[in-house]
Length: 505
Image 1 (cartoon, rainbow, N blue to C red):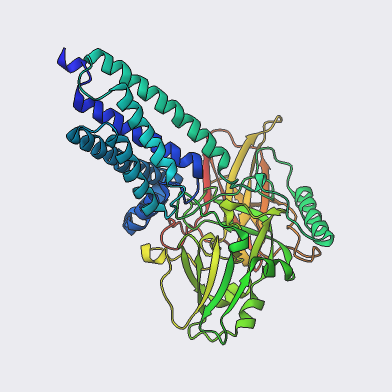
Image 2: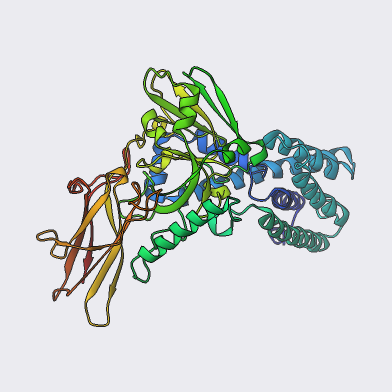
């Protein structure tokens, strides 16, 4: 029957679609998950063009799923464009009765498209040859041409699909192996002097010893560290090509390369980062031991002459953020994380660390410090956020368990930026009465003898649960005795606040 067979139009559409899948796989096989991947510039354009209201909704309601949906949309759109190129080449070949034109035309059109989008002329061969190969294979099988019985066309078209999809799976596997590691666990060890290495190992050992013995609670040094970026595909930079410029309202603009940075005096510093777009009791808050160079000396060398006492940091992924210059003076240019080379997903080769401020200020892949004469909106401010101020104090409840003796144990982390954590209080009657939780010892300071000024602490509280249901509430008190506010706000525009509570039956 006519609607059960693969007609000529359907055959062309199928071959064009499979050519697009093969083209994307071919690009991925050569580039991996890097900006040279054909989908990357499309995803980046979609992210920039999305209205601020939509971006905010995606962050607050969808979290990382929103970014994954954007990537899926970019994959679909890029695939559709490659499929259209193949369709045009096939149609042109049929019109000219030229059996070479479909494959050649697909290669030329896809190559030009990939080169224009990524700026990578040589790597554009990956999607071009893969897509053209599918069309040529289909041409050889006569999957969409005339003169062959329909049943044979169907079998041959399906054979073409099978071969192309098999090659696509292989391309995906190769591309995955070629993609640089994004996590600290997979990064190579940091090449430092014996004295610096000893300091790193001492501090990490102290952090392990000071972590509370609560199974299921993240240790004081996070085993996995959250990632939030404006792109789904991170920049891939070469340290040999990296440089940082101090520009704008300064006496003398300066530039620093990677080797010069490594030759400067470094420090190993515990700091916690918290995402301004996280939910109140979310898990986008983590701690690491960062190795880097104090930023204040770079500013002093340049001679700051700011009229607004503010700066704009610029990054290789086109991110930019404005905040007070005094905050930057306390910061580091970081190239190491937990004794290892800074991973790609956390800003390799160099990122900024700005103690006490929301995570969005701690710019990854930083390339420029622009000292401003007057205030300007950063990337997120243009989208309705105002998260460049000091982080808000929070006590999070991330763990609960019933012990063998019937008591319940609650645990979590508390963080107050530069204000410090003096205690955590827990209520098991909905906030009517409060008791002090046990706190982990503070993480060590830069000189080891004191407490880290910008790091979280773990807390734990064990109690006899009342009969029936009850509500547990947690709050923290800063070092100066200020109780964390109970006013609950959402992430937008200045970050979440409030007391975390949980009901138990």
